[in-house]
Image (cartoon, rainbow, N blue to C red):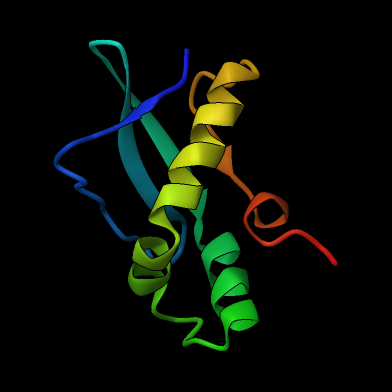
Amino acid sequence: MPLQPDPSEEIVVDQCSGVPFAMFDGNKRGLCEINSGALADRATADGADENDIRATFHRHQRTIQAIASQNHDAGQERPIITTYQLTPLP
C-alpha cells in the first residue's frame, strides 16, 4: 500500500544527518528520512545553495515522498532516500 504524506508536513532538519519526516500507511504513522548528502547533491545539480537542505527538501518534497513510498512498498520499514534515488546519474 502506498504511503500517504503527513498532512502537517512537519520536518526536522539536521545538517549532519538529514531530514526525518513522517508518512502514513493507513492510520499507522511511519518515519522516513532523506540524508543530508542526498539533499546537498540535489541542490548542486539544481544550481542552488547546497547548505540550504530545508529549501531543497521543500522544492522536491513530492518526489521525496514518492520515493519513500516506493521504498516502503519494496520492503523498507523505515524508508531512507539516497542520492542515487533523488539525483540519478545521467
